[in-house]
Image 1 (tube, one colour):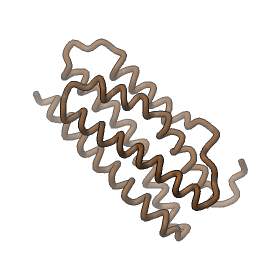
Image 2 (cartoon, helix red, strand yellow):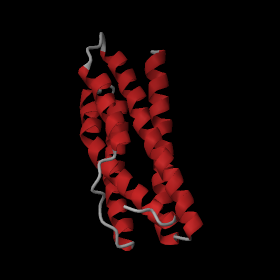
Image 3 (tube, helix red, strand yellow):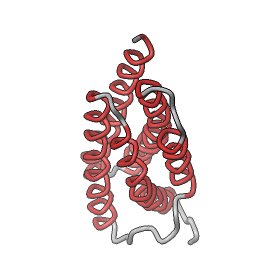
Image 4 (cartoon, helix red, strand yellow):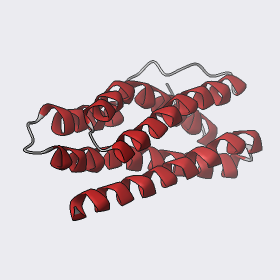
Length: 161
């Protein structure tokens, strides 16, 4: 694909993140299932709902621009998700709380990646005057920020216990 202008870059990046969100879902489910802290399970469940909403949002925005879903795999988010699942779920931990701290830590990587993307998409949409897209993107960006705050609070509580 040739990138001709800012809009084509914007579309490519939306397609890329749509694929990444889809690819990370199994790892996020595995982390939720491995968590023992109820607040952590709940927060990850809330974020799983956010992934599903993001996938719907990507469909809506891409459809409005006549763009297809991505055909290439988002290697960055996929690698972060695979590593998160490996470290947080597959390793042996001496204690559930320690595993839960690892899950918080690794899940934060996923949230930071998504937040960086949504911040950029909002910038692109503002520059391009895509107000209809902004109505979808701004709440998603804000949800990522809220997810990070929740994960930070849970991690701090778990580490202090």
